[in-house]
Length: 190
Image (cartoon, rainbow, N blue to C red; front, side, top):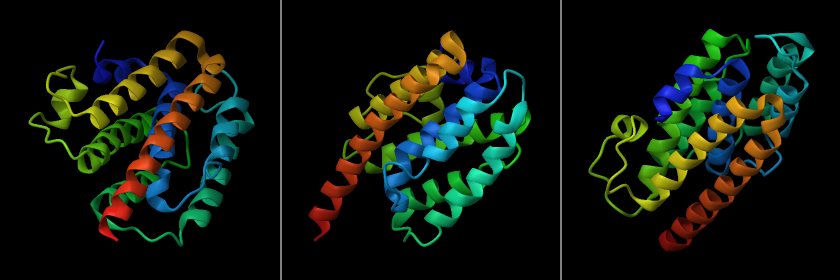
């Protein structure tokens, strides 16, 4: 199933997790630490079963403002960082399915574009074609990000809240990779 189809079928928690995971993998571009988004991950775990249900939904908005405050002073260097900043700025305070669907979709596109910008290999395909499943000739960094996005959505579809821990692990791995790429690029410019 393509990434576009997985996003279309995802429930509110899957969508929020998908968007958050994309942002989490790109947080090194905003000067964030590994645990910067941890409160948002925790609010997803605490949410009730229904859309926007329970205290977790309210906690999401509070946690989001705290995260934005922490990352407000970060220096945005370049187009990739600007895309990451837009992901954070666009995160909805209300975690309704309609709002997080738009955000998750935009985060998916932005994260793939970020990885494309940071991958030294040329990519002849468009981000939209990659999300639709046309993956031939895809650069390695972009291919890995696409796999991570698909994996996160599949974990949540199969396991619900039980897939959150594994989704966080997938995101952590991607964040480490991106941090290494950003570090290597910074050394190359120095």
